[in-house]
Image 1: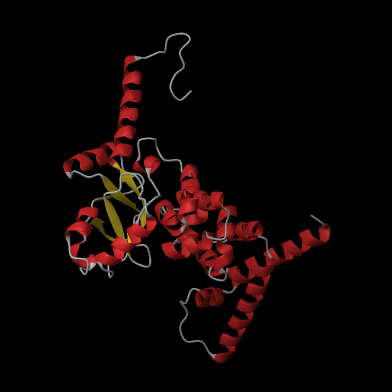
Image 2: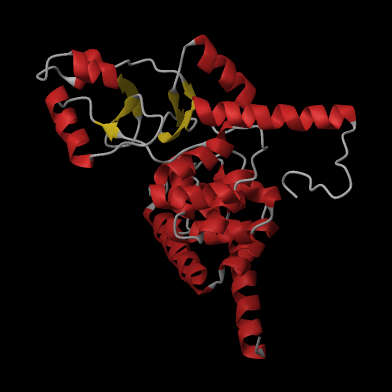
Length: 305
C-alpha cells in the first residue's frame, strides 16, 4: 500500500469516526430517532450524510468492516444504514463475528439473503451457517437446483441428518391447474425420478403449499383442480432433522417420499424412504462397531477408508 493511499485511508477513517462520535443529532437522524429539526439542522444533516456516503464509496469492504467494529453500537448501526445492500455481504465477510448480530439485527432474512447473493458460493454458505440466524435452508431454497447439490456439499451437516441424503430432483406444480394439465406435464417428461409417489405443490415464491399423490391424479376427473384434491398438510422435514426421527415418521405415516423445506416453509428438496433407511442402517452399523470395539482383520479395509 502506497503512503498516499494509506494516508487517504487514515483521513477517511478519522473523518467518519469523528463525525459519528461527535454529531449526535446526525446519528439520531440516521437512526430515525430525531424529532422536529429546523431547516438549518436538516441541511447540515443532509450535507453530513452525503459526506459519509461519499467516504463509504471510497472504502474497501475490509476497511469499512474495521471502522464499523471500532464504533459503539448506535453509531455502528447509523453507519451501517448508509452501506448499500449490494456491498453489505462483502463487509460481513470481512467483519468480526462479534459484530454480526449488531449489523444484522434490523435486517430481515430476505435482506440478508439479498446482501450475500453477490458473494461467491463458498462465502454465501459460510455466512449463512454462522450468522446469528440459521439461513442455510433458506439460502438453498433461493438457488437453482443445479447449485444446491454443490452448496449442500459445503454445509457441514452431521452424517445422521436428513440433509445428507436430500434429493434435489423434485416435481412441482401449481395449485390452480387441473389434473389434466398435470397429466400432460408428466407425459411430456416421459420419465420420473425414482421413488416418486407424489408431486409437490408450490407457489411462485417456492413456498410449499401441499402435495399431490400420483393415485389422486389418476383416480379423479381430469377437470378437477389440484387444490381440490391435494394434501394441504403434508409431513415435511428440515435439513437438520435426525434421520432416525425421519425413519420413524416414514413408518408411522406409510411415507414413500417427503418434502424437505427451510424454516420458512420453502421447498428445498425431498427425501425417500430408501435413502432414509440406508442412512439409518449405515449410522447404526457405525455405532455398533464403536460399541463393540470392532477392528477389521489385517488385510481388510474399513468401509469408507
